[in-house]
Image 1 (cartoon, helix red, strand yellow):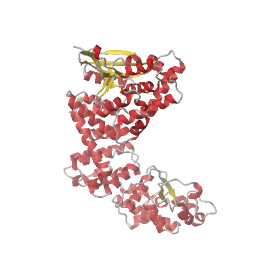
Image 2: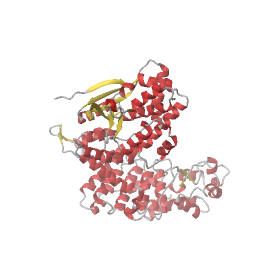
Image 3: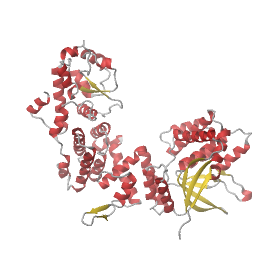
Image 4: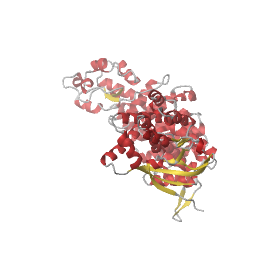
Length: 590
């Protein structure tokens, strides 16, 4: 028998005539101050523009259930989509209640009845909250103490402390911050008397509801494709939870997912893309959701004879297998990238190499093969693999292969990991071949202004830094020419270098170093002794190669530049396993 689908539009005052539950498998309350203020501003502007107009706030997708509280029967709705807006309206109502003077008991009563139903033993009516927050016990306690209770939103010091505690539940942090933001909005002159009546009677939401969980999840997904902005990870989670019938299991997996999502924050979809790459081992052709649906859960193979697609076995099954697989790789990721990865190798070498790659590369699709290797071999020869991966990934980038070619070469490494009989056959595979002559050609010439230049200089710096301490380059880095690009005509630079020499050598490896902050042009044009003393003295301490240069060279003439270029180039190429002959070295410094 077909299930009844309920749908309607409701003004906010009618929205809060229903009873809602935010299920344990839902994501936390994640709205920040900007989103809260945007909602309030939009409502305020709509009211100012036309007090008689209607303003559409958003949609809700609900699963309807019949409930009984004592002798009272009622309908409760699991909120699958729309909880961020509905929770924010809930918080706004609590703030309005507490900012309303005692003389306006009518408004205070309206707010209280919006937030919860007071018990009435005479009429056999139990106390019941309008929204039940099942996402965390601590969240329910927060709502009882600061939202449900009169005066709760006035506990500003408590709320500030909760909003700033890094170890506090994310929903509580964000709710506390939202309450403070709402209070500030109204206390800055935005009239409750104007906004609140309009919010309740002119702002509306639409909803759809069904009794079957899987139908409700399907509606959730369909509505997303029609314009409701949800993250790919939200929908992927929803579709997989719909395949788990047992409520206890569903709760467990929802909380696992929530923990992973909180760890990655806005990078969660990116992590899921790495998982897709490990499974599919091809360049993505669609958005993340379609990739999972078409290439992970229901892959097909093109039959050239029949000229049609033939279904293949799924790479992953929806439901528990998906959650378990993602959780497994989440644990791999944390083992590799968390700061305590020192324990994996008993040195800072792994941390330092990963820091170089994460900080220096402009793309991150090297992470998928690293995760796949760790899944198969754990820490066994991990550093050797990482150096091979870095050499291949960076050299293809430096030489100039297109992103598509580089992605395909990276995917070939994943395929080789899966098919290799042992690590020796993996490490000697052609997938790690570095085009040494092309790399030498590029690195011998001008590299300044190239997108890979910063990475190369960081790589050199790590070579001189070593692994006795952590490699921690600052966030802001500039690339500096020792011989300046535009020296003053009266400077020593012009005497020591011909115009042809400057043009040939100024942008080459041996003349470039990293600085921790930018300097103005006048300072960079100083002659070498003044530059070394005044410009670099306190600036190079974070970069080992810069320290080496200014401790080694008392002058910076063409012979000095060439000598440094030679040493730096040999050092860099050795990191790629490339040893130069004397003839090649001489050619590289001419």
